[in-house]
Structure formats: C-alpha cells, structure tokens
Amino acid sequence: MDDSQLLRYSRHILLPQIDVRGQEKLTQSCILIVGAGGLGSPAALYLAASGIGKIVICDKDNVDLTNLQRQIIHNTDAIGEPKTISARRTLHHINPEVEIMTLQEQVTEEMLVHLLSSADAVVDASDNFATRHAINQACIIQKKPLISGAVVRFDGQVSVFDLRSADNPCYHCLFPLSGEDNDPNCAVMGVFAPLAGIIGCTQAAETIKVLLGIGETLNGRLLLLDGLTMKWRTINLKKDPTCEACSSSSAKISNDGR
Image 1: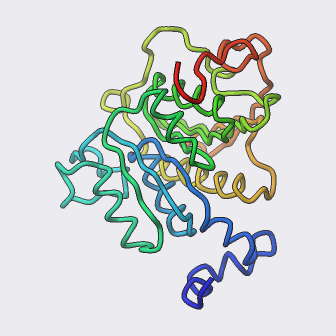
Image 2 (image 1 turned 180 degrees about the vertical axis):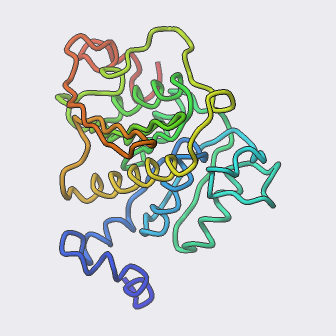
C-alpha cells in the first residue's frame, strides 16, 4: 500500500482485527452487488469507501424521482439515467481507486453463475423473490457467501448464507420458492427511508467481516428490525435437509451451463 492508501484507510488499519494485512485483502477483493436501489446504495457506498478493490453492480432500471427518497447513491441530476451509471459516478467520487463494473440488464441464474466465478461474495440488494432465488442458486453452485437484505414498510431483515460450506442453510431453506408472486411493491406498500440505510449498511459490514473472517457473522441467523420501535429480533436458522435448492441432489446447473 502506498502512503495515500495508508492515510485513506488508516482508521481501518488502526483496528487490530483488520490491520494492514486485512486492508490489503479488501483491496484485492471483488464483490457483486445485485440492485442499486435502497439497499444497494448504502452497501455500495460503504464497500467502496472501505476500499473493496472491485465492485460489480447489476441493475436494469433507470433513476426515477420516486427513488431519491431512499436510494442515496443517486441524485436529482441522475433522473432518467441508468442506475448503474449513476452509481458508478458516485462511487468514483468517493473512492477513485475502486474498479467499478456495471451491467444494466435483468440478471439470470446462468449470468450470475458466470459473474460469481470471479467474485468473493454477493450482496443481494434486489427487490423480488425470483432474483433472490436465482442469486441463491448461483451462490450454491459457486460456493460463495450471500449477504441478503430486504426492507418493506417499517420492517427490515438481514442475514448471511455462507455457502462455502454445504452444512450451512441457504436462502431457499428460509424462504422456499412457492411459485406464487408475493413480492411486496414499495410503490404500494411504502418503505421507511432510513431503514433501507440501516439494513444496507449492515450488509456492507457483514460483507467485510465475511471477506476478512473476523467476528461472528449472521450466518445461521436472521436479524429482524422493527423500524417503529427500533427493536431487533434474532431467529436462528438451520439447513433444511429436504431443501430443493441446496440438498446434494438438487444442483442442476454446472459451472459451464445446463
């Protein structure tokens, strides 16, 4: 690390759990973020500021005026612009040393499997169950950690599914795919803006802990936050031996396709 980097990341380096060696590991890491909205915004901002070497951002949407209440990576001048482009510009202003790659399209499971081949972990900041399950399956195939978050109204949740070990639960163990579209629509349901920041920042913190192997992550735990009372609840999770996604007989896609 050069003198400029030592200064930029000095407050991390002062932490004995991170130190120079840990910070260097962050600068050599690659994170995939799916979604540049309410959760992806704070997650990406803090991961870039923390010195993650490469961040890949996937989002198919353009910036809309209704996004600006909570999607803090975008500003008014970015309305009508692809979210990926707006996010990349903001992140470069915060830390020009970080390599930002963008993909402006709806991700598929096959695409995610390919993207995860060179990523160290994925932050799921998507807003629909189909994408979440596709991310989960890709993480199972590539054996990569999944840092998952969700917010609706005043309720938030966050967890880590560390799929580097087959003994750990996956997202499907917690939320089995029913085939029904029950995705909450924030345009109808609403979302408390600061709650997206709290959950997204928690995802960033858990991602850094996963990369460095420090502390105790949320693997095997689901953290629930009631934004109206600011009360947290923890639910312990276990692997479902009959899970259709992560059981030994369920992986139907190899690393090179179907």
